[in-house]
Length: 355
View 1 (cartoon, helix red, strand yellow):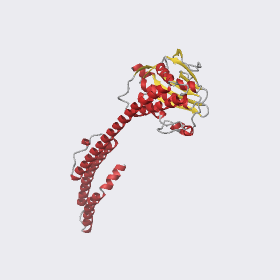
View 2 (cartoon, rainbow, N blue to C red):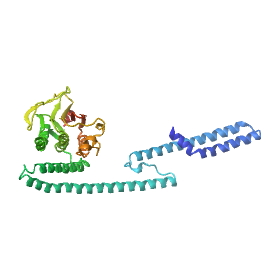
View 3 (tube, one colour):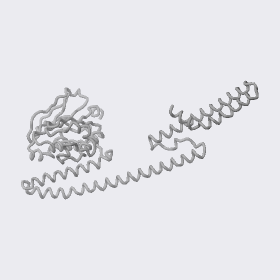
View 4 (cartoon, rainbow, N blue to C red):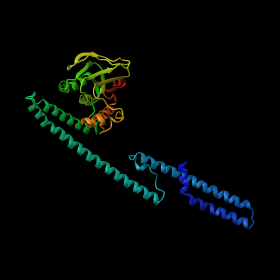
């Protein structure tokens, strides 16, 4: 309806020009008291011809607006979809659109090239800085008891470098994804081993049993996500510990044996009838405030507890959600301030069956 009103507003002057001679002819016939039948016949014929022409004009107008809307909604659509210009004004308009489209494509190409160059530079920087970090670690490990605090800080630097690499790589994961059937236990154990020193230094317990479930995923990227979650849990847990387990079909958890600093090799399996596999990483940390929960996956958002403790970067959970989405998995979090946090990683069994 709005389109029709816009069209009428556009041609209102033409409508007036069409009605004027009809009205003028009728007035002349009335003044001279001529028969009305001829004038009515001419008026109806004139009006029908005019309305027919306006109907065709409205059809063309609507078609042109539809094409422009498609191009606006999807700029990558070829401008060749536009009709052949009917006059010089249309030809000039299409020429301007083609020029703007070329400018847009050139700008996007330049932006992509700049982004790729920047990504390559920072990736090279992150890889190169690993060498002096590794050398420094070897020097500090010559006397680990005296260099305990320095080693802990060096580990944090290593984590930040890994986060930088992860952030850069997630900009274009398509070429870096290698989906395969992966054993969850292997991925989890590798990350636990990575953070074993922090468990010991903070005297935190670990509750975990090995699990025999497999998922269709990228082992490296899922390991990165689990590592980020463990890092956050360790960062905000002062006492108690961390519990890693599978949620079964009834919503309860499996794997409840308490481990202080090692991983028990026994296994457990979720019920086969479940449509998904859900891994839960639970901590007894300071928790997340209720008002912060809806925004925890936003890039750069740290929340009140993160800012007060000056520990958060606001990148870890953002990257974790981004990676999980790209892998076709789901991540969600529940938390109670002062009690702890639960992170749920959900994997579809259907994807695994189709692979």
